[in-house]
Amino acid sequence: MNTIVCTKQIIDPEAPPSSFKIDTVANKVVPPADILPVLDPYSEYAVEAALKLKDIHGGQVTVISLGAGLLREIIKKPLAMGADELVLLEDESFTNGDSWSTAYALAAAIRKIGDYGLILCGRQSADCDAGQVGSGIAEFLGLPVITLARQIDISDGSARVERVTTDGYEVIETPLPAVITVSNEIGEPRYPTIRGIMASKKTEPTIWQPTDIGLEPSQVGVAGRRCQVVRLFQPERECSCQIIDGDTPEEVAVNLVERLRQEKLL
Amino acid sequence: MAEYKGVLVLAEAADDKLSTATVELIGCGRKLADDLSEDLHTILLGNGITNLAQLAISFGADRVYTIHNPLLKDYVNGSYTQAMEGAAKQIMPRIILIGHTAIGRDLAPSLAFRLGTTATTDCIELAIEPNSRQLLQTRPVYGGNALATFTSDCYPQIATVRAKAYPPAEPDTSRQGEVIAIDAKLEPPKVKFLERVYQVEEGIRLEDAAVVVAGGRGIGSADGFKQLEELANLFNGAVGATRPPCDNGWIASSAQIGLTGKIVAPDLYLAVAISGSSQHTSGCSGAKNIVAINKDPEANIFRAAHYGIVGDWKKVLPAFTERIKDLISGKP
Image (tube, rainbow over the protein chains, first blue to last red):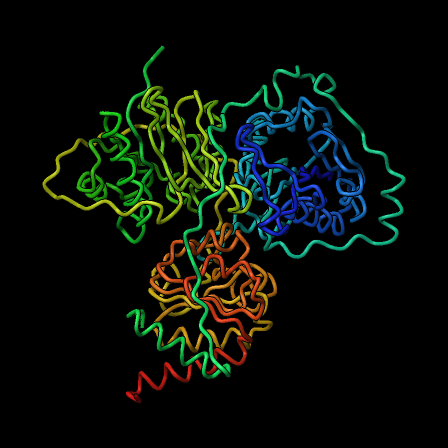
């Protein structure tokens, strides 16, 4: 069974908050000049889930990414981890989309790839955090979707999935093909091996533009959006932190208790 | 073109009552409906939900739609999407509000794509734009580093709303409303619900606790979390965590607080060895008081905290716990 994994290159979510800047006229984030983007951590969990299944059942793992000017050393990481092929929807027209236009383009690319049993996405991306693209792909392809998977087991053409809920998990079974979005509980993504890194250097991605997947540039990216950003802004932090002092840790702790009692918090 | 009117709230039941998130959602929806001078509808899906309809009316619904169907007993994406698709086409609401719950975050995107419209997930603020009468939907993005306000000219406008973003509606049992049963013909779903597994820690629920003691990566072990638990128990509080301790198995993943975990708003939040990523602070920023203990004076958590101690938690916390014990046992 072949698996398709959708991944995303994003601004490093672990970058220091001081490096985070917004262009309030364009309503866009200004990527920090000296910090490289990363492969979205949730994408990595999806890749890990695909590779876990490949370890057991074999089959090809094809990774898709969408954007423009994607950095090869970042976007090829799934290949270094053990994925087999990389397809890039790479064109300026694909950029600045919303969940709708992004899912629409990815679904068209998946249709073109054709031979798949499972489509995996991260539960959300660590930049937009919307968590909609997987569900959108499923709707466009007419497939069942299960979100927030923490465990996926495949047998006899169906997947048994544990889905994270607030107080535990639920167990759901779906026929394949299906779309599953993967949560961090699936387990830490594996590190690229030396062999994987060497192989990924030799593997060139397949690059598709909108017309290659049967779409017009007007249907993808910013032109294909169905929702608009009215405003992007940084929340004001009104908090000012009072540091509690003391000569020893014990004294500091006692001073904290005193202060909290004064403020009637204890 | 048919006209989209009113606000529709999807209700979720919990223990034969409306869930807290639903009561907050009805309060939020009532305000939006009033701003539009339109009606507030609530919809209940499932089995044995009739007694909840009057409850929804008392909280502010003008009209309650019910869909009784055994296929809706447990949440399954396919059945719920189909039921809500039918209901949306019949009711034609301008706005659909859904809680950002395990159900809502799964259902809302599927429903939006099915209806050819958009959803905005995890909203913390909703307002009506007075001229266009469109819904302005504000949510955290970039791990809480920024807020974005979205709108759309596609209808219905669907939003999922974060827990505790709005105060719960006040009940008024004298309120009158209409209850309408919708007959939904549902196809048997392709996806089968097999079982639900609860992994709940003993004691008070994290979301309900007035005091939360939370630990980060710096706690270092499951034994470390036992110390947090000891302190939390003294307050009749609960223990929370950032993501790394959950991923490392030091504590159950149900203790995770943050964008991908639970949202809490206790009176007192003790952040121990937590660096304070936006991912995490978006889950606790509603706390009335945040106390941070961290050895790094530059840690981001001090930007979110009201009181801070710069120091090693392994030394500070035991002393703090002892002092609290002294107070409880009546020592001066």
